[in-house]
Amino acid sequence: MSNQASWFTSIVLQVVGDCEDKQTKRLNHSRIEGKIMSATKMNAQEIIKFIADAKKKTPVKVTFNGELHGSIPWSVVKLGNVLFGDWEEIKPLLVNLEENKTYVVEQDARNSAVPLLDKRDINARIEPGAIIRDQVEIGDNAVIMMGAVINIGAEIGAGTMIDMGAILGGRAIVGKNSHVGAGAVLAGVIEPASAEPVRVGDNVLIGANAVVIEGVQIGSGSVVAAGAIVTQDVPENVVVAGVPARVIKTIDEKTQQKTALEDALRTL
Image (cartoon, rainbow, N blue to C red; front, side, top):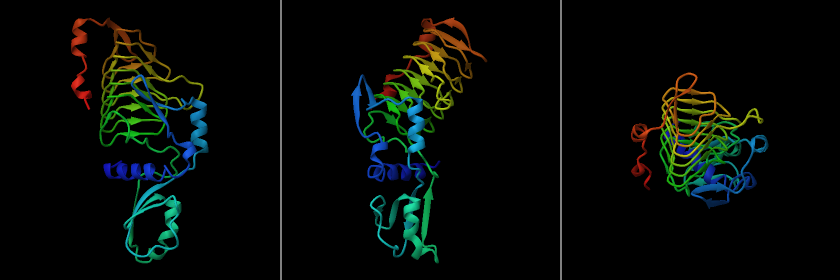
């Protein structure tokens, strides 16, 4: 997805979404223990119902030249000669422009059920190109780097960094002051609904391209080596490595120095 596409989709979802289907959007937040918490935490079955019941939308940005046909629906936003909204509602407006094709359509989704997260009031650093879906919780001073993908229901604790290209699957939980390395994957568990999510404790470092399988818990203070595939729970304050990952040592002073996080990167 291009930055331009991400930008216009965010605008559509923020402007149009505020007007339509308000009951399905998370509009109210409260700040609890350094997190932006949703009003209600959804379990897997509730997330599945949320997706199934959501009105599927194809958000588009249309730049046009000429006279539109008919009146503009209340859920479509017109700014000059640009329209933002759902394609099914905008398409009829373009009938008069079809012959000469005097319009351009930009889109990056089709029949999407879950909008992107409204990031405007989140007290964290979120870099361009990160894809974050609605119903995600992000703590204060967290950092989300370019290309990270964070699915519905995931939680990111205060001061935690999600590095470039990392993936947090549905309902994955990462504690405070942790680091999920570039290209790492925390498996998601929306389907099957009975599966347990990945849970990562506080002060954990997960190396680049590591994979944590669904249901696994990583104890606080531990380190997962780059490229490891974690299939079993990891105790607190240990280092695991390999495929499958095994405990290779207990955290010592040297390891702590090598894996220390930089507070300056989390300053807003």
